[in-house]
Amino acid sequence: MKLFIILGAINAFLAVGLGAFGAHGLEGKVEPKYLEIWKTAVQYQMFHAIGLIIIGFLMGQFPGSSALNWSGWLMFIGIILFSGSLFVLAVTAISKLGAITPIGGLAFLIAWVLIIIAAVKNM
Image 1: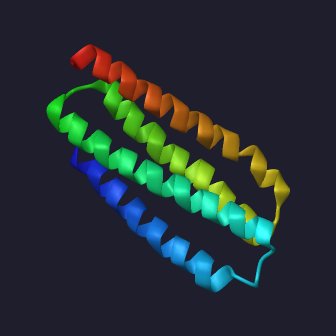
Image 2: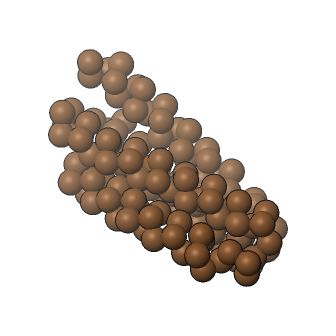
């Protein structure tokens, strides 16, 4: 429970910092399409940071839920793979990194489905 709240807060903090860096540090240094990719990475990182915090609170309500535990880890892995690959793509323009991004997106999708499963089982 506490771990996912901490991971969520750390990722929210990083999303704010990386968003500011993209807006102020990358503007004019990378092509506009890569700046948009950076913004997408920041948005998804923040959405899923909040998701991690929600999972942490839900785990307090439903301790021992393996669906919520898996959901938290998949959401965290999704942030690393999805947003991380987009951050690197935005600053390096290495298009092959785009192959990693959908794996992170799939982790996000499964994480949200697991929250639905946990809700159905526990509510």
